[in-house]
Image (tube, rainbow, N blue to C red; front, side, top):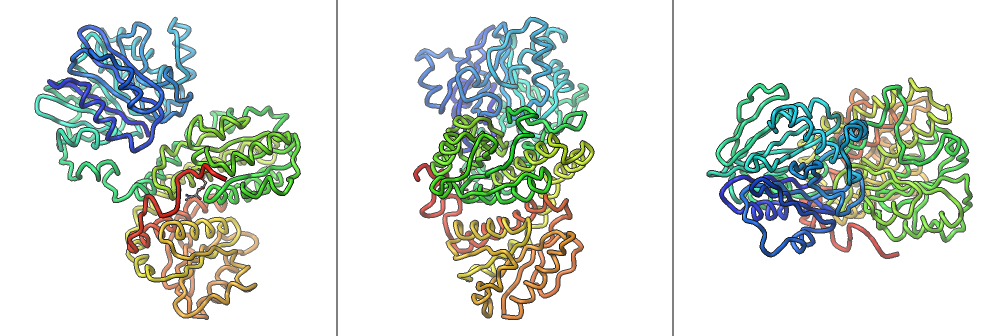
Length: 612
Ligand code: AGP
């Protein structure tokens, strides 16, 4: 998520803004910029790269000003370049806007604004807001707050917006929808930010904002209205965190914060992907319908956790699109002379977009004539740049080495690919696609529901901290999640953990079971194969040999023989992996904390493995 800071007060605005952005930079970003309100004009500077690049670009004799806005951008629409960095300006250069989120209808707005004579200089969705606000401000006799209210009524998507105008630079206007914005009340000064970490050293008096509420700050005043202009009470609260905790949103570790970020990450990845006439919108594939119909096979290539997302992709794409899917470990792929040709679609899944094993596999596949589609969380990273197309997940920066929110959004992204391919190839009707998309839209709320009931699991988990072996069982579409649960425990708590297909247990691994062995079993959804009943038999097999069994099962499903059952909401069968993975993330996290490992930076691991 981008970093957003606004300041108005007696200080030289540069310091609270840039220092505020620095305290938000842990969230990851790839460009930065500021707009300072000098008398009757704006001083604007913005640069790709880190804050140091921005500071190096500033003149030595920076004007002393007392208000402004600043931004660190995590690129979504448009790569991390100087031109795409925020703030974005109107054509007169007197109104500046910074933004966090996704303006879904920016292209429609841009077309209308261009017809009105506005000229655009960037590839971003945000710039449309700058020009829209400029027009609306004129229509509202220079009232920037009224203009913001009118703009919100026209915007679709999720956003935090701040705006400043040169005619009245000590006033800053902000608004939020499904994206964070908080105000800080100082002495003769006021702050706006995407996170209290930005201003916590100046004040611990914060003000929360509701959806579509427009806030206007000056050094002495804070006013909040709803989108219609009706005053809303200023709801003040005391920040109880210290600076370090504030950077993690009050969570003890980035990993826990990112586990709790998952509902929003999933929602942001799904947003705007079904048109009004029930067509899956994946223009990024850059494939014509004829090309999609020509695909004869799909190879999903990835490493680690991303590989497990690829395994889920196999079940979903084969079920919906009826295309054969191979799932390949990237570091093995090119050494076995894979059969690849121009009718092959290679899907390369990577959070970082820099994993060398995968980059080498992508180059091999492209050289063999395959079309490569990247699924990636990091805009303009190497793998998307070397692929034919890229579908970005919108999980935001993932700081913890152990992947959580990126993983679930990778799964959601491959669901979208499967639905798109199935729809174009006529394997699913528009009505079926619409129904499945709306089932997917329930996932954020269902993950939220799991997270709200996670405390008992956290307590139970700590009773397993002394186990040196933990086995994970899964069947069907939950088999990849058993592997992912084992990987999480390995990389976080340094415990030997292994994932198995439940039916494979009796072919050897069951010899591992003895009194007290911990087994986590994920019950697959009930289907025509009654796989869930077979898994219940597997549970009995290990229980009979002394295992301690935790079962993850959908609400309402009867489970016999488990020490503890973790319930997940009932979801469409192919969507259940997204839900089952959440308790396993918490399980691994809690045991790691109990064992005192370095949760966010586990030993021997790197967030991006850029060597083969
Ligand atoms: C995830 O928990 C691991 N840290 C690791 O397996 C990771 O998924 C793998 O290295 C691939 O990284 P990527 O998604 O950035 O390509």
